Length: 218
Image (cartoon, rainbow, N blue to C red; front, side, top):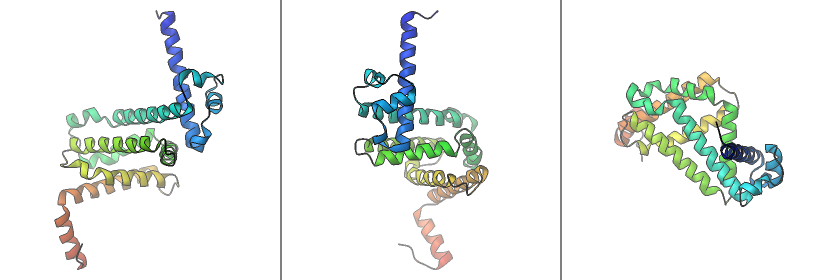
């Protein structure tokens, strides 16, 4: 049976989590200016003074909310993709469509929209810009880990392009131009092309372009 102290700690943790979630929602909607002590407490359904009890300043709350969101996001990706089991099941690059569709089934366009808003808003806020940069660095590290487990050499060289593909796809998903199944297929094909070009190497690619188009490459 939980003690009174344990129950109090659990209530405190839940309230703190509610404040962080409320701050993320407000930040996504209106940037840092929308995140005030009163607005966060109201969104979380808590008394106005609650935020100052848990955080020294609204800036501290906002930074922690963003960091917590990124940690949660990365943990979810690890779990959804079965990252720890990739090596054991001998996953291949051609399985990417199934993987992407599986991840997206739990992270629909509305989730992608929220994350885009968070990162874009963070880059416009000088106090949070570095947090946004570190979040993207973390994503690239995760991508490199995936590719390395798939047996792709020098994986860190292609993860910036992987991020570009995923960010562009996330943006296009908001328009509904393609079905979710088609988006998964298109991204999978783009990733395969990216990996294939990486494995071929720059000289081979330049040679193929020159032979095909008759144009020299820089």
